[in-house]
Length: 162
Image 1 (cartoon, rainbow, N blue to C red):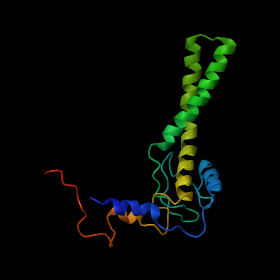
Image 2: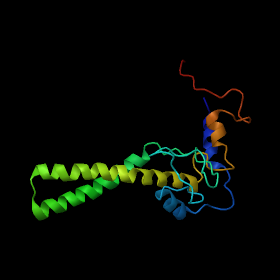
Image 3: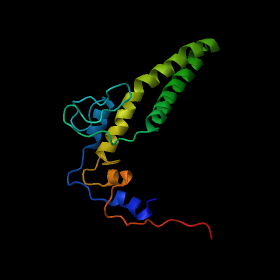
């Protein structure tokens, strides 16, 4: 068990002198390209991020997009589809079966099309903000792997048996 001082050090590490461009990285990620060079492919399959950029060699295996891309994709698609659905309902008043036949496939297709771009944007944001192991001076990856040499031999534990 790691103590809170080790975990809190993750956010206080020094950053490289030159900040990474956030907007440019987001645009490259949305285009499904490497956030560092903008040329190499970000994915080797539909949503499987490459371990390293084939063009510039930037390590991308650190990314921790997890559940954020589907969440944001559903929010985006929901706003688009519900807005269009309301506009069509007010203007034309189609039967319910037509709503189902129109909006359900549209929502599924939009989710499948947008999900890789949204995930690429999340990965690029993590890269630009030096999050989740993207900091070359950080020790987060060593901490997560349990390889820190400067941590105490016995981490303090909470004892609730008293």
